[in-house]
Amino acid sequence: MSSFAGWSLFKKFMVISSKGFAKVADRSPCKVHKKMKSILGDETIEVTKLGSGDLIIELKSKDQATKLGAIATFVDIPVTVSPHKSLNSSKGVIRSRDLR
Image 1 (cartoon, one colour):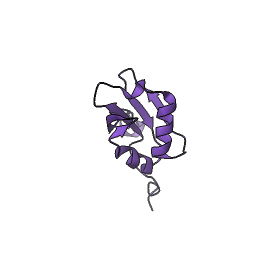
Image 2 (cartoon, helix red, strand yellow):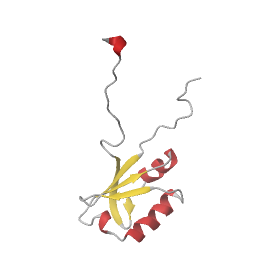
Image 3 (tube, rainbow, N blue to C red):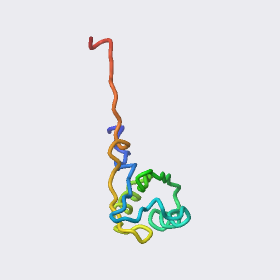
Image 4 (cartoon, rainbow, N blue to C red):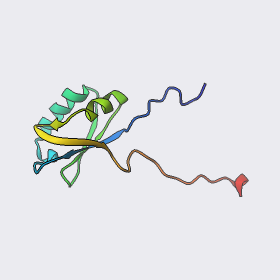
């Protein structure tokens, strides 16, 4: 049995972007928190505000990713939800003396 069998692969970092002029990040943090709880449940999540007016959401489960991906409006603003371009991957160099 593979050691990866129990892993649940999903995009952990998602970005909520506004479609119009109103920015999601300009809304009250209390409203944002309340709406996140209603969509994703009580499990603790991390929300970071970007200078562009978007929000980065750090998710805990595949179920949360599915729920967040299904929304079309957030705090009365039309939005798009997409995976973050760089935070969902890692890059590195593997070195071995045996491969020289």
